Length: 98
Image (cartoon, rainbow, N blue to C red; front, side, top):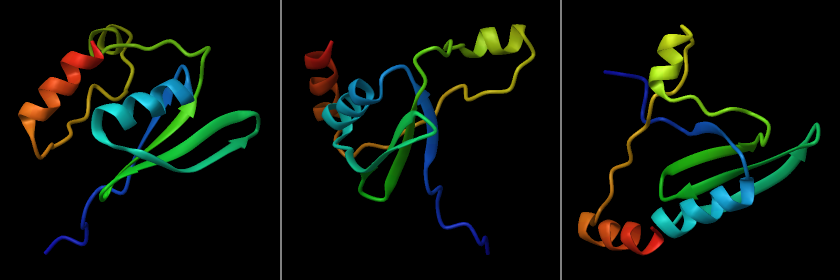
């Protein structure tokens, strides 16, 4: 039997904390449950049910896709998946959000 129950959270850097938090709220119902500034960096924890994301604002960072990571021989997050309860509702929300 595994000691692991679930993944507690995923930590992501984002260009704009508030814009990203708003997107995750509108798209999936995440709510900001903690927010702070540490060493001049705005960050926060978002929760939706048992799922959590931690977002760190890093406007000067460059986003690399999995192909760019491979070309540069860098490790990184290629993607993460979310399981949703109502795929049809999610498709409507995604269309409305553009």
